[in-house]
Length: 432
Image (cartoon, rainbow, N blue to C red; front, side, top):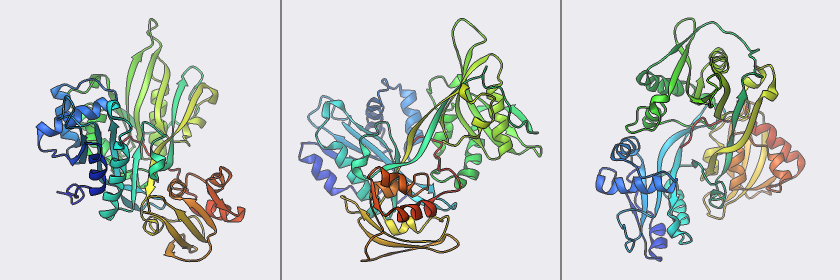
């Protein structure tokens, strides 16, 4: 059993909710009588309907490796069901330069609408951060459904994502037409190939995290009780040598009375090579009887924009996606590679205390860093939120300075822009 899963309960969080007559405890995921009501409460928190026994069983099997915290109200009509939920686990996140760092991943944060304004979310999230820091983790991360909650705890967007809606009549293919072949694959093969392919390429993309087996089962439609699983289809691209280099998972939705106007919804498109990327995008855009292709959770720098005849045939929206929270500044800044030499003194403010301090960051000509505490006057003063956004290289210090979120002379902000820049656009391809 992982040491982080058996981490002791956070005493400060326990005391905070106890002051409101509530109970804060770690869930025994091996005890169905305790875990199943918890899962129902978490699903309710995300506005899902009551789950069947089959669906709860699928969730139990896919998530039981995580550490679950529940906040309970002994006086409620259903004291066995929590009024606050959060779960977490340790996974790897990729930093610029291809090095990975263990990250405390936070998920499933809900508070019952009957128990708002009782300090539940604060107790849970601060408890998670203290538990992560005590376990020696230097960084935490999450993806969010409500973007206004997490900044107060030091989290900030570090990767952004785009959603695409493409009119296939206007988006005639003008991109490459690579050799290789496309084939439909079974759900079982899809599960295994997704895991293998993602495992090979995740360290090439800053912001990507290590996935878990339950994710690929769900992505492949293999979770018991999964809605519309039978509608999922999958195609792989194999290079001329026969090796799988890309996969696309999609479903088709009828647009109405006209059978020629289906909507093709791309659930996941993963590619290891430029040929695989082009072949799979061409496949979905030239699919028979399809008038619209919709793809969510794509990079902010998608090459497909330059592979279609009319870029105005694609409607693209951008939103924040992957949020990070630095807990240990020297460890995180010392783990990535930088784009050029620089010498910067950073004053980081953190109301929760984890990352508060002043550090000198020395970067040599090879992009290798040295980080040490200092009493020197800072070149840059910024919050832990701002530093957490900057660390992957997808957000510029000069932009945050213009927004009033960072204090620095212009030359220092520009030096930080140049040094922190990432050759590869930061990207997180999944929700967690």
